[in-house]
Length: 386
Image 1: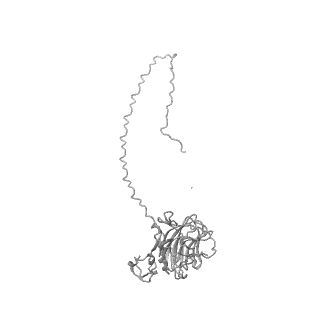
Image 2: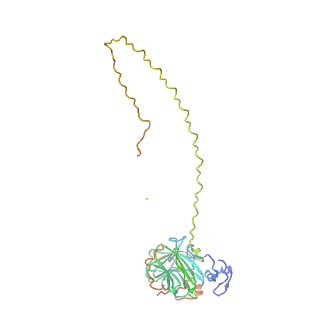
Image 3: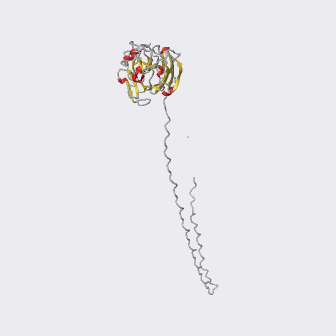
């Protein structure tokens, strides 16, 4: 982090420079004045450390309720599996919960983009009451947080309890990853503060004024599962990829085009095959001299018939006719003739009331005391719902 101008300790003494800051806890650094926000990614809570160490602490009955798992994951190698059984109440407050806490303490007037992914198990309960999975809670003692995401029945909702508004809702789909990007400016004045929302890469809520903080209080992040204690079935929600940044481009997933495949050097077909010199057919075959048919047969002298007795001429046998010459088979054979997931919002019922109300533990306390108590129970917050 680049050194800021001034940060304040619990005793209101200015701390200057990076050297002193190295000796104070991370949560105290987050109290720096708004002007110290640097461009780019501010914080990651994507579990890629393989544990929960990116977060300030946890409110859980035991470690198996907030497990870092390798499957299923939305990105990277790790995700969080949050499980709640009826009766899970680690801070002796209203409702049942197992949640991670990040003491972000967004300053008044600050503006950030938050991106994270959530998947509801196939058997996630369908109940007509509230089940929160992400919230920006105030550091006061009681009441609903100023910004919360929760499930009621078969709907996912964004609620702004400060003004009793539910500006966005959609149908709950189980067994798939839901990606959320929240753009928020933190202020108790709805003319200054605002929210803007993307769901599964579609902007579903244009920027609109909102009370995103309560006067005189700061917000901090909680995620996991927190629900009414009337819910009996076990609930499981997965979280992955949480990040906080100062620009939309920093939270958008980068999907660079893969480098072109190296096809390698074209195959060398080699030199053309040398067909060699034409075959020497040799000299024409010497048919030899014409066959000597010999001299004509000497038929001899005519037979001397001698004296012919005209009364006894011997005509002899008539010559038998010769058979016709066989023309043979023709020299060539003529052969034979060749003989053709933003799931539709159907089923969403009109809202039957204001956003569900939630509270925290009655112990309360100031922000400074809350920080000192730190993560040893995180000054349990009692939430009340009407």
